[in-house]
Length: 253
Image (cartoon, rainbow, N blue to C red; front, side):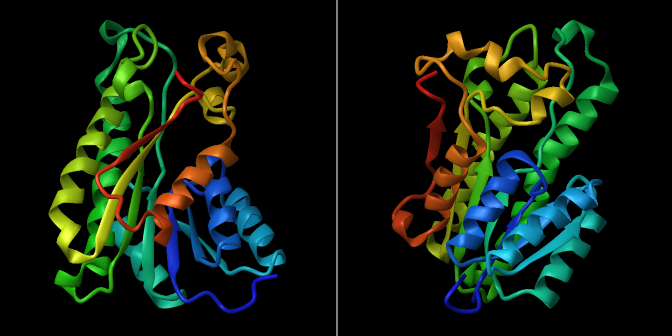
């Protein structure tokens, strides 16, 4: 059980499964109130919140498609009204698609990929800065953006669009970190490698993580909990002099 009521909130986008859910649970265990964002699966988000509450924490499920500005604004308004002051954002919501070459990709696929992975990250970061930055009357805080090792590998013949979207997230991380460094806001990124989560099934390759073990120097995929540990470190005071950093958590890949 937590010893006291949480005094600050972290918003975890895409928090109903995988890395987001693991991060939400770990943040709660470290004393944060957690806003668990989801797009469609309310039951999964509520299950994450229930597990946090049963452990003595505080959590709220908040629906929003991060690519829709009106929904993002409504989400932040609800977090403002129902939880302690925002102090952190984990920009985790993202999608992949089925494996394909660039010359096979439709405009619809590309728009969905970039709207969620890039536009969504920008919108959520913008609203966080408006609350955290001392320039806007905030007391500071931290943003952690979820990138991917794909951003530096390129994911040829599979997910070049996804890799490109995560390259943009890396640039967002570096540029925004410099913009708000003197305003009490730290911005960092985490680049997971091949992690054993449900996201691979949404790309049509449910066994990809296990089948890719031989490509990884450590000879195994990572877990959502291992990525969550890196994220929560970057959110916390232990990383107080770290901003603009992008941490590879890839098993050496």
